Image (cartoon, rainbow, N blue to C red; front, side, top):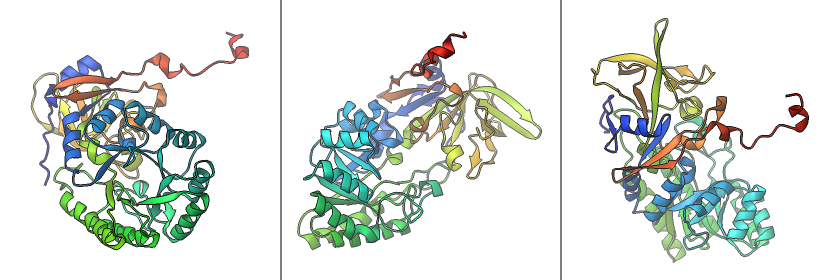
Length: 425
């Protein structure tokens, strides 16, 4: 079981929260690089750990993971460009970068073809479109096994309500199409959702084996996708990685025995590698009572961290006080600055506001939202014309600014006013 964390926090990776906030300002994302490296090391038993960069795509994080031996997944043309900028090679065996999506927009198709990026195709149209312009390539097929599971309906990536993957009953058709357009299918990929349990994972392994048997000995790699959960709530258990690996390794070995050649086993974690490394440091700007409810209002909103409003996601929280105080707890609602009633960090799925027991705090103290390294900054927006926050990566006790705070001028630098509207000024 995971220990219940303290609700008072003085440091992040050994550096005082006050020092980070005063040096870099708030709202501020802080990542502990040692945690990321530790999580990656826990997955070394897999042949390939392919980082799902959509979780946290800062170039410094990508470069650190590359240096530590991880490969990378890209779900857009922009993510391909990020991977290249972070030093990943476009081609190799296994492919350093894999483009994984359900469509090729025109920019992504152009990059995949020009750079020789391996494609994991999630639709018949992707197969046809790539074969038309780049016959002779190897591809992977992402298969929807007909069922899904996850911590939220919005993170469920399998079944007939999901847009993801080629429907399992169309696998033969997909293989035939690939042959017709001159593409070689060498791998299969399945991912049913984020936060799946072992019962559903066992079903995925069986579905993968059935699909690989149907595809035949052309298959040289299988990927179990991502979805590895992490403990967000106090007392939650960590996933049994040995059991998780054994499920997939048993499947892989049966296929190797059947095909008579090695089958590479990949895993594609995002959240697992970065979530626990991340902290969103915010300043409390108002402590106000509304009837029977006490609010801590901070300078970060769902423009910085959207998971609570999107999924009702729970994040641990702690207080970093300017002056030493007591740990007296009180029930509070934590909200942000946005002109939206839904701008609440303490809510459950469906938008139901909840209270959280936190230490007494005052204006000027810092509230730290924890386990915020995954799907935090990457989902951030400029809503209400708030600049994007800064990002800091801590390596070996040193804080490195890896993204400066967006300026107000940059908010509208790409916009223009037609001349006829300027004349009346």
